Figure 1 (cartoon, rainbow, N blue to C red):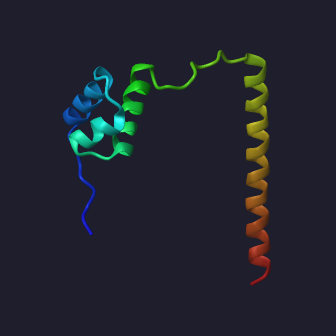
Figure 2 (cartoon, rainbow, N blue to C red):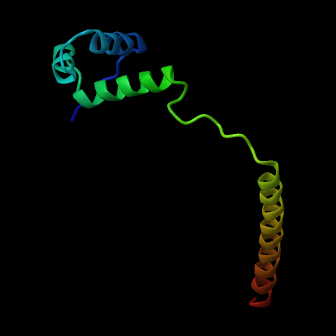
Length: 96
């Protein structure tokens, strides 16, 4: 059983550039370069996401009212969690 081949970042960038600039399909480019189609697709996808600024949607503006409500809920849940920890420690001592 052999280890997965590793490729330099320069090789990956060249492979993506070749895939983007040529009229050939990705499978033919992958076979010409001797890499798997899956790897080439992943490199192309990662390159496009990086060029698009991460590929995700831009951050939505924060609603201050919703933010304050979430902060209050977080404090409440943290208090409940602390109480449950203390109760669990109390009952653990009682069982001994």
